[in-house]
Amino acid sequence: MADSSTQSIVIDAPPERVAAVICDFASYPEWAEAVKRVEVLEEYEDGYASQVRFTLDAGVLADEYTLVYEYAEDISRIEWRLEGPSRMQKSQTGSYDIEPNPDGTSTVTYTLEVELSVGMLGMFRRKAEKMIMDNALKQLKRRVETQSAAL
Image (tube, rainbow, N blue to C red; front, side, top):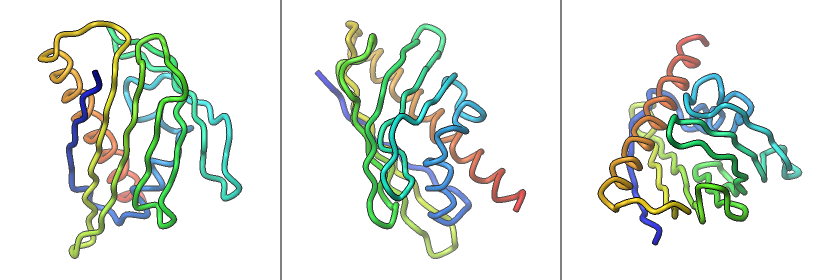
């Protein structure tokens, strides 16, 4: 059974800068520690990726899978789903919701629902999921803010 989790973080950058980092899949191995390789398989006419293949190695959790992406017209919501099962996952759906704040920052809400192919006690799965989401948001924040400071 899949469990859904949601976490948010405030990033010191406008939404369009946050979305640009999220959508720059080729750069993920530079800043997302567990992501070892990324290949954009298909793109929409506007140039945004529609199918992306990931190679992930987070120690005990290694997997290769393809995600199908959809975007809100203003890129305030980026969502995905797993294309077919992978070695470690039966299903995965997720999204980033990016909201502007009055002070020029953005609130990014990450929602993730994963159903694993391997059995794992609910308590351990939730702990692993929380750690994955914490790391993903912190790494995204660091990447966006580092790039913003360089501008």
